[in-house]
Image 1 (spheres, rainbow, N blue to C red):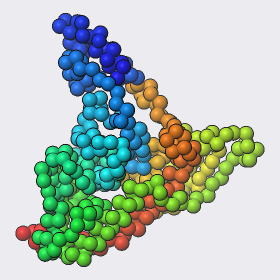
Image 2: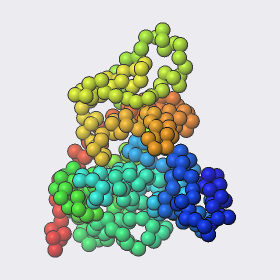
Image 3: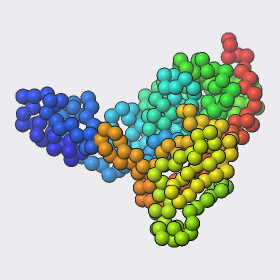
Image 4: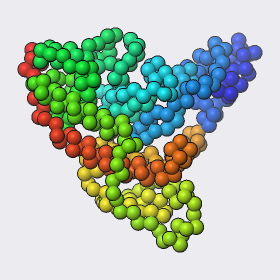
Length: 358
């Protein structure tokens, strides 16, 4: 913000002489200029930091990071700041990719503000919202933009009874996560917003709702998951004894030792992990298993244009207060991936109510 305001002050005295685009300093290590910021310069609108807008966000599946969530500085954040008005809010939100985001439906649930690419061009559906026209909302028979909606309409229409809104919300997540639904409607899901069918009976509706609830608990609270027991092969104690804890667990980039064998990976120069079961890779989001998401995001990378370094070890040490957090996250990703597939296999057959064709 200081850099933006500095550029604004330089421009202000000469604003009648030039276009902001021709005047500002393009330094990607300090700011990424876009149409919104150019308009603020032209209108002489300064920006001031707001300490309350620092949030932990869900950047990618199994990946949290810090973000300054403020619509005046972060472009295209849609209405998420209106929903997550404070960093203390924990609101379960279904994220699913838009029709143009991917040829395959991907769904993931979060409780922190989600990044717009968490499921590729993500559409976000919060469990509750006090605002009209804020985010995509769950409609009666599909995911639609509506000013108002009735989450209990489906059970009343198809089963002659009402259920609570929580059941409807988790039913939607259960259906979106159902492999049979994804396969059967693959062509439609590649062209339009997902539509949620009514199943043949109230009993099966509640079974899908329960499966969706279990998946939600597992995905939202992945930090609480049990660490899968893997084989850890550490370098000789004579070397380990010479390094501190942060160095011992520091991760630069995890990698498979053999591209054809995903049971073993090199965590860092001091540790090799083996015994990862094949089933840990069966559940994917955006084409990657949860293990591969951890490998992809728990690392050190440098942004090509700005030169800014993103170090996952900083989040582990400073936010989680645990240098071993990336390793623990890897083990939890194995557990969550396996349990997700167990829940998916427990779902009843997808039988659509005959009224849906009418």
